[in-house]
Length: 315
Image 1 (cartoon, rainbow, N blue to C red):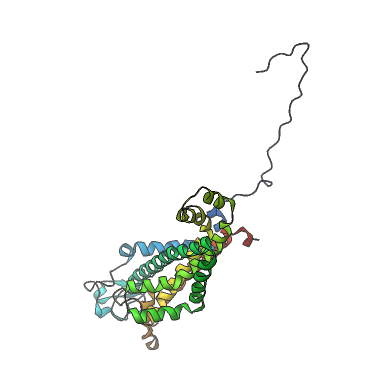
Image 2 (cartoon, rainbow, N blue to C red):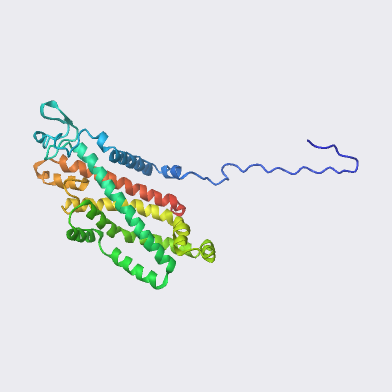
């Protein structure tokens, strides 16, 4: 509501209103998921990965049988081709059976769960160890940084498969021993990634301000520096999960990884390898296809995450 002007008052010209900028001029701020799914190949890989993870979580409910329960496995139904019906029509085997009469589809579901579990657990533990080592190297610098990075360089100069094979040859078979070997192989990747990102953050003003307030070193490292290193750490962690699954499958195929009572996809491939010459291809090929799909989808998702989290790679 405006007051009437008197004779001595002068009219004040109205201020021009600024029209909103056109939509094309505003920077497009798409959510992370929308930017990720802008690539159809990456979106398909993400959908496949989520489906495989769902299979891993719900293996008990989705599997037609428990392939490692002797009460449900029929030896008479061993080595049946895909699409066969079991003895007296009691079961239908979509992907056939292996040499022990286990339903191959159920064995693959359980194998995916074990492979994913080993890969995720080993990558997470290696991430925690490597992040702490990398942060310490970047924060303290000097002699500590040089000593730590020489150990990291030595670790990365050795073939990961060779180191894992030597460790398991010494430690023996077992889930815990396989996890330990994978952690020892992988921690250096995370240490180098975090150290490079933390060195950039260490020289920024907010870190200097935190140090000026007398905050403890651990609080500065883990509460201030580490959260700003998460983007490259997430990408490295995703790719290292695929790397861990590949290493575990290789070691299990060679017979020094997981025991036969807890077969992963690599062990399933090894179990069917001896049947390849007798034209019973499905026992080894179908687990191999599942392993390729799992590793391939994780790698595609990790590569797309790297591009989405680093806009300079989008150009």
